[in-house]
Image (cartoon, rainbow, N blue to C red; front, side, top):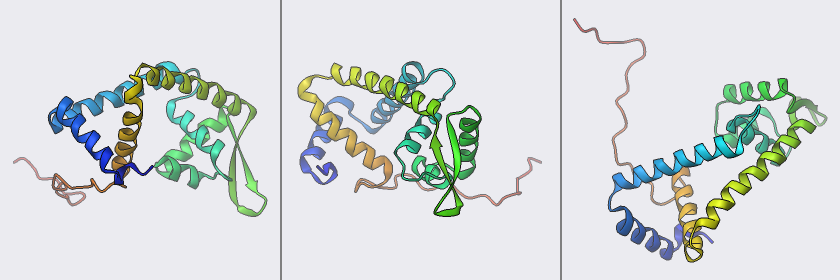
Length: 184
């Protein structure tokens, strides 16, 4: 279902925002609260031991990728190559991943999960599923469908794939590098 094109979904969101949130500032406050709660949940109930949440997410991308490389992992995660490289180096040193040359293209290095990486991913994926299932189960049954539709719409809006894109604030003024006004 493509929720962003569905007038019903817009109606649900509009009614929800108007009846429960009242204004954009409260929407922002609620959204930040959700982000913080999910981050805390990930830290406390999913990620543990040697891995950070970002490393767990990296392992997930490697596991689902077709011949994952440094560049493809960085693109999937939406991070810089240098950040992905540091992350993968740490994972390799800890024994979660290994790097091998692609047999079809010797210039390309493929990243693979080791047995340790697969075990960690399996354990943490179960923990993540259980944590999110517990939240889902606390939602009233009749609200689950609309919540999922609204989360899909919100996800699309955050990715910039929604017709809701609108610039509300002017971009910050650009400063020339190396020039700082002195306070004299």
